[in-house]
Image (cartoon, rainbow, N blue to C red):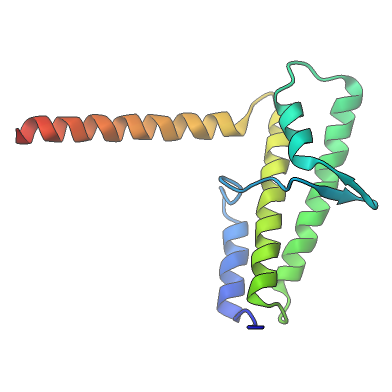
Amino acid sequence: MEQLSVSEREKLLHELHGYMAWVGAEIPDVFEIDGTEIPLHEVVWRLVNKKELTEAETIGIESLIRTLEEKEACDETDLAKEAVTREEAEDLYKEASGLLRAIMNLKGIENGAHPDADVRRKILQKKIGDARGLLKFVDDVV
């Protein structure tokens, strides 16, 4: 198996530290906590779409965020190691960015906002602006 070069590894780590590394990343379907697998994607989806949270759910979210942050940090540490194959690095990057996505979604719940909705709104506004510009260009040409 081909080892990941130092520059490739640094690039992946740099991307993970980027402001929007989690955008577009997929939350892992399943995540293991203390030997127990939880349906992470489903749990995050349900919490994000819940209108009101109980006190126990709020405490659970805080605990889950800490656990996900610890695992994401471990993934980054493993990615920074010298002896990582390209496949292992891609798997670590995919998991870490997915965990970052879950963390950001859960933190958004705590803050009363849904970061995905803000990103989608900005993307939609950009597409509308691009479409208007294209239509204006076509009108000017014709």
